[in-house]
Length: 178
Image (cartoon, rainbow, N blue to C red):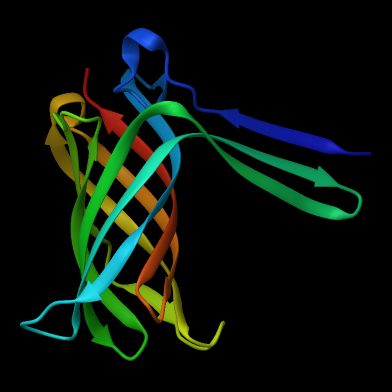
């Protein structure tokens, strides 16, 4: 037996700035999203233990298919505007970091989401030689535009190569007061 799960994130022509799937839960407006950010990470000139990242993500469809042979997944870009992420990671130990950042949506960037690391993020430099592979939970701390009053969490799984190439898969769950 094969099972299939499909999450479709497609932007309607009149709502191109909204890259997120919305539903109502316990009288709060809730948004669930997944994105794949790609960009560049580099140490700051003032402190090599501080890494700055700039990245962008497209509208996308994520499919996960479970088969008797195992799991397969595909992340496919769609037409639509971009999301932009800027973050700063501060190395807090040999395999941990703290940090914060923003995600802005659309060309005009009037919708901005602010976040910071919950406790500490973790990375492992030994999974793939020459890379820093890691994960973190980000706490959503409000924002502007669509994200005014937002609260929630973002889970991040990322890879930073030795040349600074950045790839980050994010899963977010956001809550808004009515």
